[in-house]
Length: 190
Image (cartoon, rainbow, N blue to C red):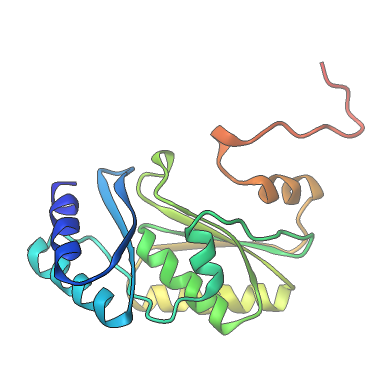
């Protein structure tokens, strides 16, 4: 966390960039999301890597970020339909964002959600995709092959025919602390 705050100061001073969000996350990590011109972001990122002296756990640089990844990182949720669902889990936020970028640019899947290092996630990240089965499978093939080539932890699951209650719940969000109870159909509630 000390490295994260130190690096944030250094990268902000290096080039004209915008700090979108920064702060502590679970697993004793410090997460920084910046934006700006390609050259400025790259220059600032290189400065942070240099001054960290090995303290940077992982990073991702996306000079041409997919609009859905951008929007989801800013808190917008994608639509979820009754189509197949894929869940991708990684050990770091950066790995998941890289994988999401590959999955979206290489297929026609929809990105529903990216959750990055929430306190109950031990620094991990998950992303959820929705689309026809062929596209969802292709997206997971692309993402997992890329991450395995980099020797990064990756786990994924595909649900070909999700239950309608699961689809409704995922549409609202996957964080338990903020989820609301769903009405039971055909069951007595006591």
